[in-house]
Length: 433
Image (cartoon, rainbow, N blue to C red):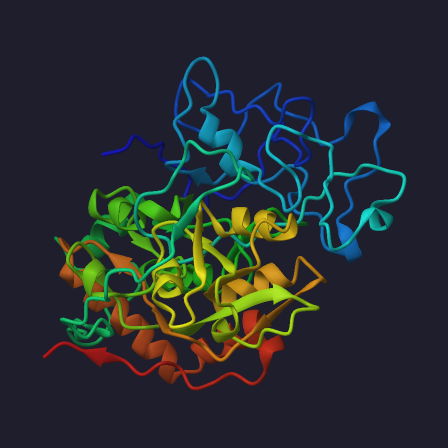
């Protein structure tokens, strides 16, 4: 079990002396507080103001400033453990990986080759757009390679076929009416959560629209976060009774299994392979894998990318789908989709392929990119829960069932994804027999 600190019920209150986003000298410090594995810096953390009077860190095309002043304190997990001597290399790499900026080179903007030097004429600036790094990565990640470093192709041939031995959409049926908030049944996992005073939600902080840090308020928010808040509201009667724990994508199932978090909502696809170690709720969102290419590209789908380098997060179902594509593109694995975006902007890969929702967040950061499709696969998102607590899975499914019926799901869609059109019908619940 990984060590953690117990927060206040709503662990998103801005802390004094929290660091600004822009790297200073050799990047932000992650000096541990009392030698705990915090990723939030304490005093003497990096300052946001670029040194040597460089240009203000304003993203291209008026994109929002990515990381706010006095950012709140969530608990990043598993991004390398800090020691008394400072943060690990992976903390430095994972916490700041803005598109176009190589880790360890603060204050230097390396524009895309497609943009040419005229776009950045005269000044070096720090681009701090939030990298959409969500992805459906579940498996070993290469944490030793710095972001932006060239990676060998992950595969040029078919990957192993998907496990189709189950219906991954089918979950445990609710056990009846929901108990009243604040009155969870004795001995249940919901009562444990009630007694601890908050729901510990595992998610990311950089998947735009689903779980990303608001550039102005510092809060982590999005469709996935609202799914967790709705569960907290059902337990406490207050959606703010939630602790957000930032976890690595490749270890989402591990954090659920060992109790590091109570539940994960993090653009996570329910698959038969994952069901072996993790219980899932019913599906709360249906995504589909598409492709992001340069705005000048003539490609209309993965079928037009024969022998082209297509990037996805290592260990992800997206990478497997690229390797299995009939057009035989070259699947290139990077640690996160943020790293894929950096590689794309440097012309090291020709395209990125993952869930359409994640690609929308990446495209929002790059005016020289576009998303093309149709979808090459279906990616049903579900919340991950420990197999040791089936009563909690049934409870969560009852919450989802209620919110499908009362319009809460539709309102959540309209809030975060409404710009893509009218809200569809919520995914229908499917239950195991």
